[in-house]
View 1 (cartoon, rainbow, N blue to C red):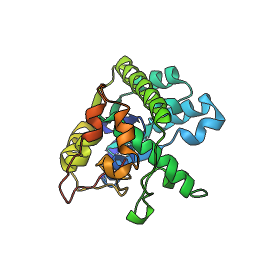
View 2 (cartoon, one colour):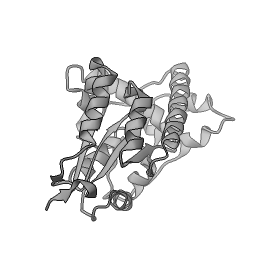
View 3 (tube, rainbow, N blue to C red):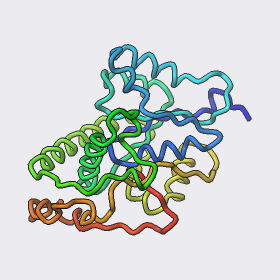
View 4 (cartoon, rainbow, N blue to C red):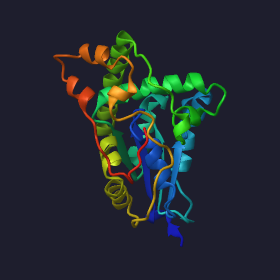
Length: 254
């Protein structure tokens, strides 16, 4: 089956790290009518903003006829060297946005520490391998987390999430808001929402990456009590105690 350019839904997945974007894009790439690519702007950072924008324009202009009804890639806002120029391309092209988020900021920061730990263990391996795991024996042991460093990274994450939300709202493009927690608990429903948003039929898919951090933070952090105590009296305290229980057959990645 082939599709005319006017039939192709173009999309960009915008996200902050540790929100399930790898898992989602791996699943979308299994659909026969979707081309879902990774963080394509990162390799162009050394070549500058012009190279990133040129690639984006080319990619978001598919051939007159092709095998995909939806094409897209993902990127973090901080990987875009010219955010205004990138937004202009998305505004002037029929590009839709998928916004990947995570409600539990505490768990996202814990996962960031796990990635730093993973990088220490996996020095020399390809970059993508250091951000996700694909087998249980790759999972690093529970770390001791420095409270001051945790606060610092949490503050940075809040600022980046707020900047990304404002950036997306300012573009006024069709946007699908997705949450990591929903992907973890009900994968089929979330993929159905994405397929409907992209104008393609349902298809059985599943990402390959597996969850890096135990959903019960008591099992994921050696100094859990110390870290939790530092957030008593804040809105973040309940996030330490949240434990989601997905169905046995449901997978999820960070």
